[in-house]
Image 1 (cartoon, rainbow, N blue to C red):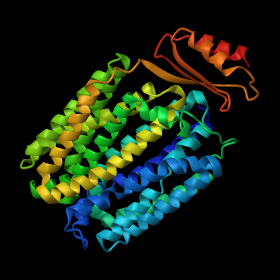
Image 2 (image 1 turned 45 degrees about the vertical axis):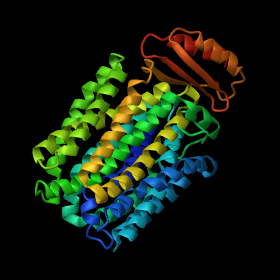
Image 3 (image 1 turned 60 degrees about the horizontal axis):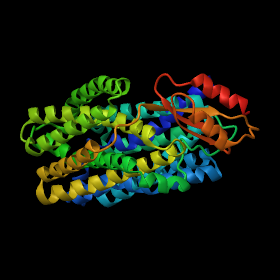
Image 4 (image 1 turned 180 degrees about the vertical axis):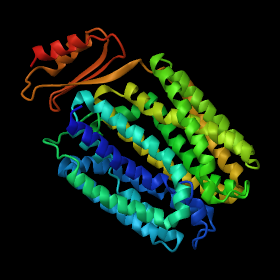
Length: 453
């Protein structure tokens, strides 16, 4: 990577993390705070307030990404950050659960993730784009882990309104950062590997393997949000643990989850056993949710089961994008990721609402029974999925004035050793390949492209 590419990648990963920070920081403290607001005596409304962020994000992230193709990436990002900041300040000043819900809804409307990804694609060369996207993925994971620990500590120091206000201030600083620290792209064009294409939606939505993964990310985050309607109350009521000290539970289970995730992912990728690791993580998640259904009367049991949950959660969060990349058509990866992200946001909303409703009508066991049911259904889907191909995505740049035959070059590339899929898109000046993880004919690919320039 050049210095410019590295600066763009790190800077945009930070902007992406800020969006996640607005959701994750309040996750472990939101329910306990919301119950003291007017209207907070109804857990269903607490769930709606918690999840409303996900609804507007699901509705707007793809349209705003497409809008950035027309009016420019940074204009959409500026507007999104301003909307996100406005929602944060509204939530900070909320004196009722209704106003808090409106603030959260407005936060979600600043849905800039697709525009950020598109800008990142504009600013990075094809051969480095996968690394740039991986930086964003790592940043999100670290943000989630840190937020579970920092959320209770910040709530003690500045209160939940202070967390919302801090998020708003950081959003405005991020706007300045985008203006002066993130380079302006020389050319903005559509990137099939990073953006959603409406023409590819039917193909993506008909793919049974991708639908399994979309349900998986929906279920994973629906269960996450439903859990965090309940877990803060369980830690307070069962263990008598003051909310300011909840981080003492989250810190060890999050750290253990991260440590054990690494060898599992390495084993799955290097030994071509990704499905085995994936299914085992869903099974562990299922067992943890079933256990939590019956273990809320013991802090020790809760900590052990939350440890199992976070091990599984971290593995699944890391493997799902990898599986999407391996399974999605080479020229529709961006569309597949867009649908996947929308399913995730819908899970955030519906999981929080369902968790609040079930908690108000049947208590915590009903919530975890829902989570366990979602995991069991996902486990059944995962067991019947085809093992993913041991491939990775490679991209090559075409000369700006390339006038060759895309179909002929695609066929020539597919005939090379280790190349399983090849798509040439002259309008983007890119060759998208799915190649074997080792031993593919990289020299032959480069030579074939050069000979057609």
